[in-house]
Image (cartoon, rainbow, N blue to C red; front, side):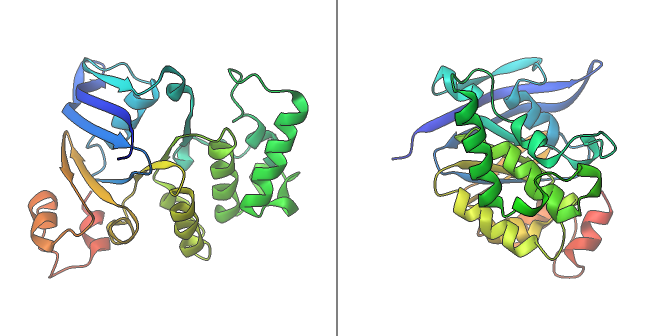
Length: 241
């Protein structure tokens, strides 16, 4: 049986006194692949920020299987948090993901950076400024940064918001390969891709509803999104949010 990595228990969180996430619980296991869906402003990003320790919950707790696991989480943020005018190279972005808490030499650090650059297929742009990257190149760079520390849990916040469509299928195939060794939490608006890729689903809209397995029927989706899925497309549904 896979080990329990992170146990989120009854967390409530918000900003400036306003609660946006209420009494949410979720257990994440080794090699888990959880897709988180829900409307904008429903609390999806707040939920993962609590796990990352970026936001302190009003109530509830986040428990890790081991103390060091908290430092072994890879995080790929939303694109709007990236300043593409900042003068930094691809290799420097990736290097910033090597945690200071790890007792590794400068040579070991460089070896790991070279290794992940090769794995992501971005050798040709390793010395390029991030402002010159395409959407797919930026995505691979940020994914490399999230993976360079060999995390046990990888969290991706709306990666499809800046995905290069030519790279989209390869990206999700890459995630499935990563998932053989690493648990993944994926926040996405692309319901169809989430359902076809992940193992379990969580719907967040202030509260969290968990669905074991990805075999979700239209009735479950309609119940949570309040739209008839057999009448309009998923893109139309999400434009309402």
